[in-house]
Image (cartoon, rainbow, N blue to C red):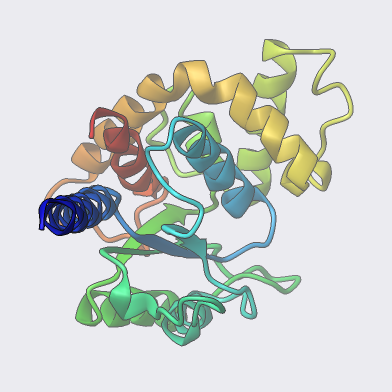
Length: 247
């Protein structure tokens, strides 16, 4: 009888330990936010945010399967939203609806005479549809590289895409001449170059956030993302990811 009671007590203790382990795992999972993003380009924006998230993974603030970049099949704003909506995680089967935070990263990229860019209708439709689907938008008018430039200085005067790239390249080369000696309008969007840019700009990130917030304030309550050049909300996604350090 004594052995049977001891065995039953041991089994009961194991069951209780298993319950506690499951509770702890469940609590940990709840603390780790699910984030899915879809990006307009295949290199600069996704690489930048991969670098930011890598730091969170290294300290276990986020897990590999809790941050997902949707498969890239489109390059226009409404298409990027479609990429997000149509994405299905291969192993978990999760769709965008299963994620707590849903974001698309798009450029206004005004249509150019020689081709390229997005129509007003497509950009505005992307914003309207995202709002209806409760998807957040990190947009840049005119291009993602505006976020880079705001690390160096505040700017509220309209700037064309090519001029924006020129200014960013000049700033990066002045910051680190040897690292960015061969930087140009083509290489700036390469994965390895974006990694270097992230590393170079990280120490200036708070400046960029303040400048981006100031810029939104400059445009006021009637702010129109499509026409207000320059403007960006990339800082909102950056702030969300940075907030995970304190969780």
